[in-house]
Amino acid sequence: MKKIIIAMVALVAMVASASAGSLKFDTYIGVGSGTVKGVTFETKSFTATEYIFGTGMNYTFDNKILIGMELDFGVISQASADNVYQSGMDIKAGYNFGPAELYAIGNVIEQSSGGLNAYGFGYGCGAQWNAMKHLAIAAEFKTVDMKTEYSNHYDYETGRLLIKYVY
Image 1: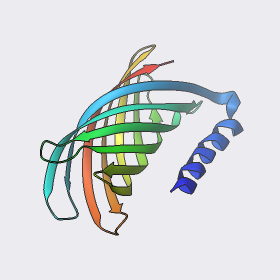
Image 2: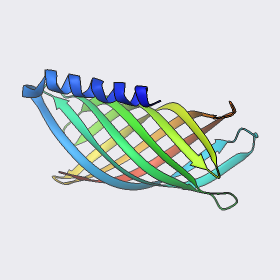
Image 3: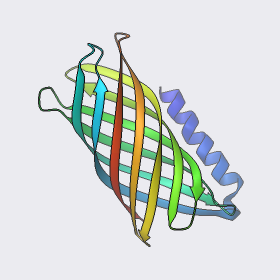
């Protein structure tokens, strides 16, 4: 898993450095919340609330193509079970329409709860509105296929609303 994360970071860095003269670079931190729906490896359905803190960067080329990377950390809070702690990395590619951005997401996630660890790969989409110079609001949807250390699988979907401080 570490090799995949390092490879994704290296890819974003290489693309960015190859075209450094024609980039718009945004770095941000953000917080958000969302709803998680899924099926555990015991085939039990669940719904939970997700709280997220993240940081990331976006590059916009002269032709308005957008690429980006985001790291986030969060807690999935369930009333009837232990909290799930997670960390993940998203790679984004899309188009910048000016104050609005639309993008596709590929992600890697690691989760831990009650001594059980899991990792997964997912995909999704998002939209961001750059409301002011230093404020952006984003909405994202992701679906993730998770695998535990004991080879059990479970899936979940998340819808997020994020507020970002851009600097």
